[in-house]
Length: 125
Image 1 (cartoon, rainbow, N blue to C red):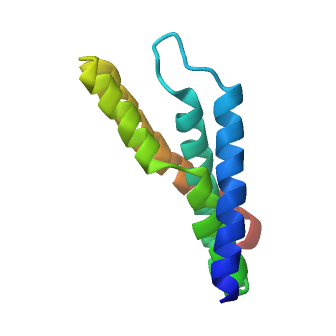
Image 2: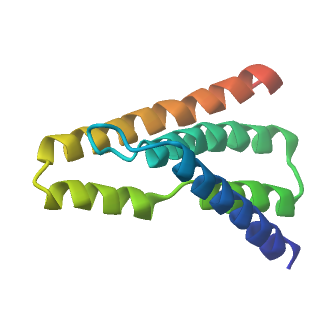
């Protein structure tokens, strides 16, 4: 039961952070939603970091669930990313949609791996 509460609280915090960032990071001149992109990249970095830290430090299940499923689940957003891609495609901005999708996928993987490597440097393999 404690894990459910931790996910609920973490998810609320992550969602508030994401909403706040969306209010402060404007759309680019190219109409790309940079706030979504930025939060997803930060989330990818953090989940890579937290994943390795959790493997090494074995935190309480509620803390791990609250941080990874809750906070990062609330912070990052695949559904918003998908809608933004659909909007670009609907507006026949195929090249922008392709680049946004490709950059999100590739840089998200790089960010996740970077977070994992950073944690590995801090606490060992």
